Image (tube, rainbow, N blue to C red; front, side, top):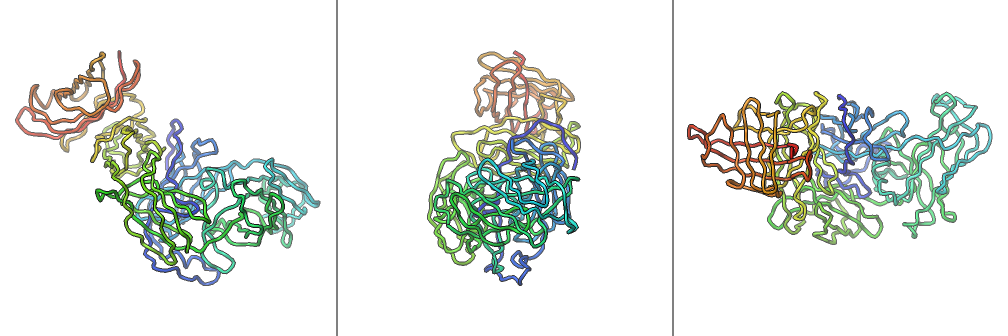
Length: 576
C-alpha cells in the first residue's frame, strides 16, 4: 500500500469489538461446539475470505504511518492517515485476528467476528516507554505512579532460552477499566479460553503489559521456573470487585486470552504471580452465546449506524453500530438479563428495551425504534485526470461518527447512513492512494432518501473546483472557477473544456430549485429552457477565502429538446 502525505485525520470511530463483543455479523451456528483440548479454533467455523479496513493512531489520536499490519498470510502497512486495507484475507467465519507492530510501540492487535462486508478495526497504539532499568541477579521492583508494581527475583532468559545477565530495561503499561479507550488500546478483544477449555467473555478489572529488553535491545522474559509478582490497582469505578479473581494472559499468536492462575485483592490492589510476560488481565468470566438482532424503524427501514448499548448487572455498558442491513450480532453473556439502549447518531436515546436471559445462540429478530432519517450517500471518486480512483477510500465525518471509512469499487461508492433531524450537514474526504492525492474535506447536506454528491475529485493541487457529469458522459472538471456575491445571492462559474454558470438567489444553506437557483451549461443547452434541478447549498463561508459547498442534480432539456440528467459538485472559495 502506498503512503499518502497529508494532514492528520480525526479519530476513526467504528470499533466493533468490545467487552460484550458486539459485531456487525451473523453466525450460522446454532450452538457452541466443544473444542478438543488445546484446539480452541474448533469454535470458529470454516475458513472464509473477508475484507478489512482500519485505522491506527497514537495516544494523542495522531495517525500512525508505516505500521506493519498482518491478517493471516496477508500483510500491508498503514498510510499517512493511519489507514490500512486488506481485502480477501483468509480467516475463520467466527474469528479474525489482526496483528500490527511498529518500532517504539507495544505490539498491537484486534480480534473480531468478521462479517461478509468490510470489517473495521480501530486501534490506539501505546508507546513502549522505559519505566526503569534493573539489574539481573537480584530482587528488584518497578512502580508506576498509579500504584502498579512489578516485583522481580532477578532471573531472566533471552529469546533462545539462554540465561541472561546484565541490565534489564523494563517498560510497563497499565490499562484501567475506566479508561475510555481501553477497548482500543488492549490486545485482541475480551474473548477467552478458561481452564476447562471453554469459550468465555470477560469483564476486566485491570490489565498490565510488561516488556523486558536486554542491553542490546533483545527481548527478554522470566527464566524458566521463576515468577514475578504483579500488583494491579483496583479501579474506583468497581467498588464491588471480588476478593479473588482469575488471571489471564494474552496469547499473541492465537489472538485471545487464556486463564492462567488467580490474583487476590490485598488492600486496593490485585496481587498475583506470573511465569512470563506479555499482557496480563484480572477478569471475571461469563459463559457466552451468540445474539443477533436487526434494528428497524417504524417505517420498516433497516437502520445503519444506530448506536446500540448493551449492559447487564454483571458487565459494564459497551456500544456498537448496526451495519448497512441494520444487523448487529456477536457474543454476549449467557443467562443474563440485558438492557439495550438504542441511540441516534447524535447520541439521543430513541429506545430502551430489556431482553434475555438467553441460554443458547439466539436470533432475536427485529427491534423497532422510532423513525430516523436515513439517506443513501452515493458518488464517484475521481483523480486529477477525471479517471475513477481504483485504490482509495472515502471518509465520512458526521457528529458521533467522527470518522467512518468506506471502500470504493472502480471509483464508485454508495452507503446508507442514519441522520438526526437536528444535524443535516456532513463532510466527505476522498483519498487516492495511487496518486497520493486527497480531495480535502468537502461539506454536503443530507437530501433523503438519496444524497448524490456527484464527483469527488482527489486532486490536492486544486483547492477549488466545479465538477459535473451529464448522463453517462465523461465527467467535466472546471478548474478555473470564479465567484461573485452579495448579501442576497451569488454567482459561481467555471471555464475549461465546457463553461458552466450557476446563479443563486440566496446565501442561506438549504435545498433550492429553479428559479431561486439556476444552472447554464453553455455547450449543451440554451437559456430559458425548462429544468428540474435541485441545488443543495451546505456551506457558504463567512469570510472572503472561505468555501462555498454545493451539490446539484436533476434533469434539463438540451438545445435539441432532449431531456438529460446532470449531477455536480461545487467547492469554490469566496472572492468577495
